[in-house]
Image 1 (tube, one colour):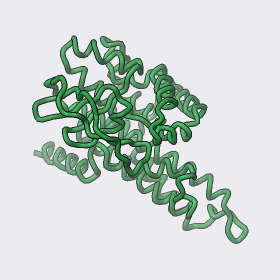
Image 2 (cartoon, helix red, strand yellow; image 1 turned 30 degrees about the horizontal axis):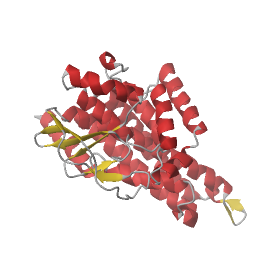
Image 3 (cartoon, one colour; image 1 turned 90 degrees about the vertical axis):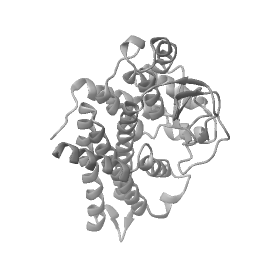
Image 4 (cartoon, one colour; image 1 turned 45 degrees about the vertical axis):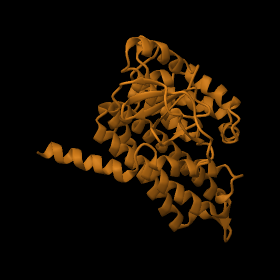
Length: 320
């Protein structure tokens, strides 16, 4: 099945692409990885003004949503430009908080929709992404959802732009369901991974057209063409799964999209690294910003094995 974006969605994607291209996101990523959040916060505000975070917030709380298809469109572009920050986590927090009482939702959701604040979410005892940058920290505990009052030391991760912290215990307790929030988190992560994979493929195709061996571009070699074709096929198979899942929001459909998109992005990253050669390993070369993100997103919010198990379980339930 083919899922084609309508004119409004294509215009939205193009506007985000133009915004992020002008923002010089590699410089923003490197600032963020050093703990300098100024340029990242400025970019966050521009993304919020474009309506990105409002897509997960109901209109009753100054949002535009819920609009999962448009959110997927946006997160593909965020992944394509490797935007740092707790993007998925802020969406997840918005979905969690819309199930809170009206007073809590009215107090917290408008700030998320407008970009005045960002949020992070993590299970109790697990590392949260960018807890040092996000004023709203949500810990998922056996008792319910807690608004954590602080965070522990910042630790490095595989992706330098993903800064990890443990959330402090205690804080206001909100008894909220989490299944819908997990579904949205996986959908946004799948879209982000697809964008990362597309960016890696584009950069690699451009590189093999320029790099030469034996007097010809390496992109003319049959083996190189085969590797790129395999990467392209995997990404294009993941795309309809993603947008199909955005329409149904069934947990198994979203899990299938998450597994396919993250595996395609990871395979594309391996191909990109091999075809770039030694330069691809260097932190100074921009490719590394996407390579590390592809690896990190593969296991974020459920690794491929966990997602496939959910798909198989759901298929068995439907059969009976």
